[in-house]
Image (tube, rainbow, N blue to C red; front, top):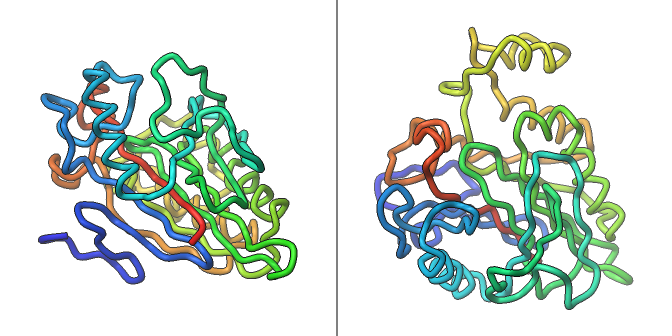
Amino acid sequence: MPQLRLPEPFYARGEHLAIDLPGAHALFTTRRGGFSVGPYASLNLGRLTDDRPEAVQRNRAKLLDLLGVPPAHIRQIHGTFVRRITALPAAGVAPLPDEGVELPEADGQATPLRDVAPMVLVADCLPVALAGRGDGRGSAGAVAMLHVGWRGLAGGIVAQGVRAVRELGVDGPLEAAIGPGAGVCCYEVGEEVHQVFAGSGDHVRRGRNLDLKAIARGELARAGAERVHDVGLCTICSAESLFFSHRRDRGVTGRQAGVAWLS
């Protein structure tokens, strides 16, 4: 990706950011390379925005071509439930779900299946991928993608995500990757939110700003992730042409994706 340095082991995959995890791949999309216009330009993947539905469908078709496996769609509610996808067909798992499809409510998805890609949509919240291998006999491992905002983080979604992949067959080392999201440089919150994370230590606070990524890293380590990779990019202060940001754009913006799938 031109003019953007990524920390190893992240790398550019076309216009997007990628990382290889044990037995899996993860992709964090940017807003580049799509068909939407105006405040949703250009690769807006959020069908609940006020973007033109036909543009969102074209953007999702382009993502499908890039992944090679169908993404699993959910309706996110800033909770802690991590959906397990253990058989297909499953709700919301299709090359291009119809606009009328009722999506399951969840803020994370995990699967041991190779032909589906758990996906979350974000525009400042953190997309967090989890992956690990199985024992090589009964399980090849599992992969998950989590939608991590401050409410989900406070509620324990990280631990729920780790529990999900362990239940689905990961019995070896677990790795995680934190994609682009609101950074401590820009993420100002009220005192009531700071109080929620008072037990995380003084290092997660910088004046009125909160370090969601540091909290997530700590939660991942406590839950058993042996390695945690952070791409270190803030959606709020990065170039407007690179990421959608709910805060920067005052709510009128698109959504990028975090997607993970078994290799």
